[in-house]
Image (cartoon, rainbow, N blue to C red; front, side, top):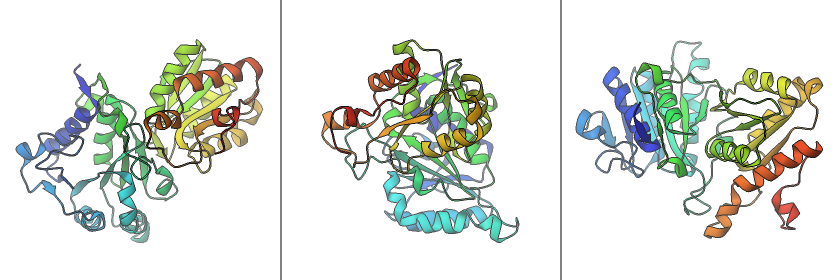
Length: 338
């Protein structure tokens, strides 16, 4: 089993699907000659040539629209949005067109395209280039929204996304690109969409995370020595209610750890569902550990506090298990207005 960085796992998944299916093509800004700003398309131009690996102008609206058209005509385009914020100028093509074609055509048309985007804080890109913004797309029926959390999920979910008959958005926390992990490649390494992964079994509490917070949650559980079940949600929309609710019915407690704002973050839906569909099993109130309702700071020491830290997640886990009470977030304890 090879060990790869996350960005290598993405490039490997793209190459494997391009070898398997001649209709797969990739395009975006700087993805061909430069092999991607984060080296996620390394080697593709050399192997597959400029017809299937294309650099585009700096116009997300144009190349997202081109991907919609190509997909409806039988191709399987994979486009790269360098920073997820740049998707804003192309949301019409994605949420109004690609997501609606199957419905509007009564199943006659599908749009098998993948939109990849780097997301998240941790590398000093500032408030305009460090958001996750899954809430821009997660409430759009017809779109599947996926977030990778390690090298295996990068490989397995990417290949599954390309094979899906409908549009899939793959969000890639860029702070993970350099992380290494063992990767099962080939057919055996493909992971199903719309299904969560239980990355650590446990009996005392359910911890749901996604993206870079999966590793944070695992480290926090190890640090405070609790018997927690950690679930990588993986697919946010539509999310795997069955896996989460089965776990909550067994453990009786739920925490969601997310790199999203307190207001409007994705974990609110998970907590609300648990409260309404697993209420009788709960022994304490479910809650969320989130980022504060502020822009992502640029200053290094402030950015380091923005995403939930291992130490703070461990504190809240321990407090919750010891007292049954929902702990205060760090910015309340420290008297910082959010």
